[in-house]
Image (cartoon, rainbow over all chains, first blue to last red; front, top):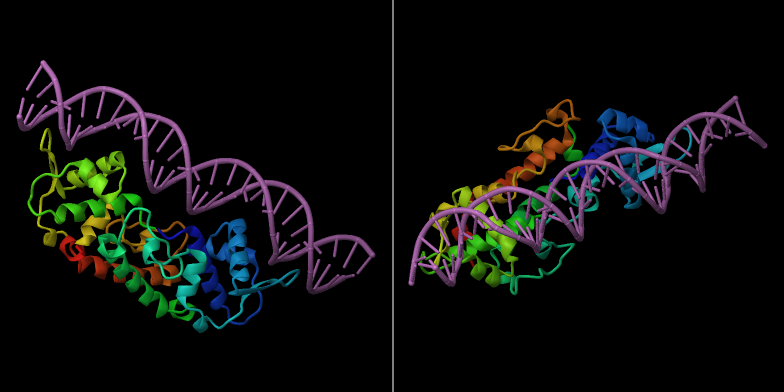
Length: 136
Length: 136
DNA sequence: AATTACCCTATAGATTTAATAGGATAAACA
DNA sequence: TGTTTATCCTATTAAATCTATAGGGTAATT
């Protein structure tokens, strides 16, 4: 399951990307437009700022804005920051690899074999789509 | 993340599929060979029997065995029984569809759009692989 | 009748997720 | 300079889910 955090984060990024100009948008406006708990969204936007997707401005007229062009933001990076590993098991993860406690040999594990294929197929989708591509 | 239930279930099915003959295999043997908690595995095998993947025999010489040929068991059905929906959000699920509480229009939702692609790519993998295909 | 091994329900412990609370900090503006 | 606006940050809680265990019941074999 996709976490709410990822869902809300994606929606917020989309909303920012669909803005006509690059003026900061307030949390309240995004939360209201996307039906998201404002406080929860606040923490999500904060993490997106810290990971370099968003800029922010305090005080009146402040808010969040995209730092890069939507076409420069691949879904791979967004998903990894919001959701974590793209792989469904750590033993097939590119960026979050971990060996399984059980499983003496990955090359003889059917789960490993299957999940490698699943990871590759998901990765292809995320790599071929930027924030600009998923705008409606 | 793939649940342990799914992981263990897949491993157990694989182990049964790799048996030379169709004699029942005891839970203890599977648990030991795959490093799985026996009691936990017991409940997983039970659910696999109830959903028509496995047969069982009680008493001495009893155990679990595959009902169908491994090549007749597509990963789609296995994953759906063990893990649940293949889709990462209910609004793009074929077998477990649910409308989002937020989101007035799915056709204008970027998350929907992205997750539809991810679902399709995963589905292709699961549809093209049977239990026989993931044996090592 | 004794042994073996699956059958079944309930429950507890651990982890993760989702959301809330409450205030600190900084910018704008009158 | 003081008030308002809006982000920044930490801690905590509530809920849900996952994982595993407990404890006995049932059926088949020998």
